[in-house]
Amino acid sequence: MGLVSLPEDQWLHPGADVSARQAAFAAQPDSIQLSPAAAAPGQELARICGVDGGLPEVSATHHEDMCILTRQPDEDIYRLVGAAVAYPTDWHPGEKMGLPLAAMHAPIQGYQEQLASGVDHFMAKLKPGKIFGRCNWFIAPTPSLRWIADPAPETAFGHVTSENAGDTLFVRSERQALRRLPETGAIVFTIGVYLASLGSLARDNVAMLAGAMRSLLNGEGDRRGSPYYAQALIEYAATHKEIPA
Image 1 (cartoon, helix red, strand yellow):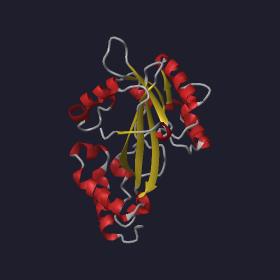
Image 2 (image 1 turned 90 degrees about the vertical axis):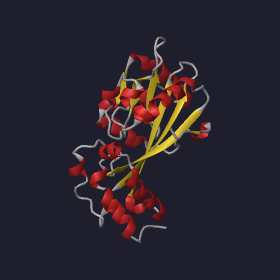
Image 3 (image 1 turned 45 degrees about the vertical axis):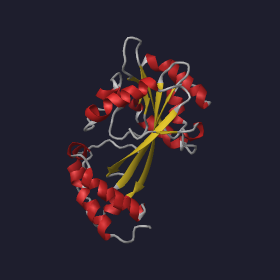
């Protein structure tokens, strides 16, 4: 899972662009999905964050998108019961509501075989007061913070070449964190999105991404659209010396 322990003061990013987030939610009302089970945890989260309201108000005033997961007394699995996601990375919250974690991650190659049991165990054992985080990355064909992978990757990445990859490919990273709320026992999953053009990265980072292109699992690589940009990225890394050191 690649999780590391986080202190309280590193849980959320301090510099939210509140106006941009509020505009994003206004433009996509379906980015907020709430079931009745999210009400009490959302209010508890708001109190912790010093915000009036519930889950939508907290996420609209912080850098991170936020999701709430709970489990029923007769179940051992956690389900998504609330989501406020202004900047999704190719998913629609409405399609995931009520699903257990394994079903939510079904499109991810290897999740069921390699991660599902470990994630479920971690969630069950997570104690209030503990915060854990991890980061992932994607290559996107757009600088938009909201990324739904339409059209098909052969079209979305069709304009990318080794010559223009620095300007047409964007490295998208999610800083994810998990914590259990002490009163309701719900788990809050936060997602902070960060975005940079490939050409703005240091040379070593571009080389690392080029190496990762060669080692992606075939299935997961296909889902991320890598067959349509990987060679351009690898060639860009090998030939462009103006990348900042």
